[in-house]
Each structure stands twice: as C-alpha cells, then as structure tokens.
Amino acid sequence: MIKVTLVKSASNEVKTVKATVEALGLKKIGQSKTFEETPAVLGQVNKVGYLLKTEKVGE
Image (tube, rainbow, N blue to C red; front, side, top):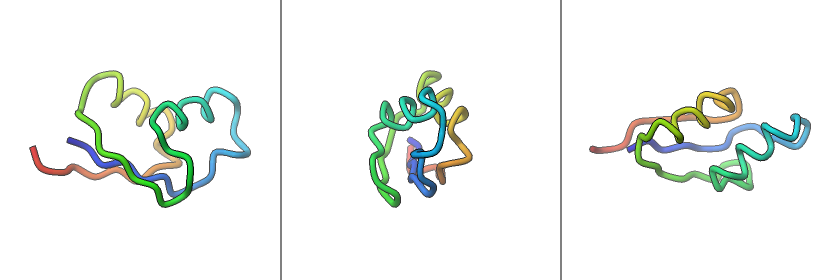
C-alpha cells in the first residue's frame, strides 16, 4: 500500500497534470489517500510526484 498526500497545488499546471491529480482523488492541499501499488497508480504518482508526498504503509 502507498499513501499519497497532495503538498503543492495543481492549479497552475497543464490540463493533463490537473486531470491526473483529480483521478487520484486529491482535491485539496494536505488531503491524503491510500492506494494499492498497481502499475497504473504508480505511473500516475510518478507523473505528478513533484506535487505529492508518498510513503509506504503496511502490506
């Protein structure tokens, strides 16, 4: 499992970055979500990683 927290705003980013952050279900700075480590999720996190803080959470 991976915990993802939005730490920077995506408001001044291009549409694809905004859409990726929204697809992860993150809307406000400081909001966190936990995901299974699937290739799709890891790709999204990699794409917008500079806006996020990520950490491993339990197995």
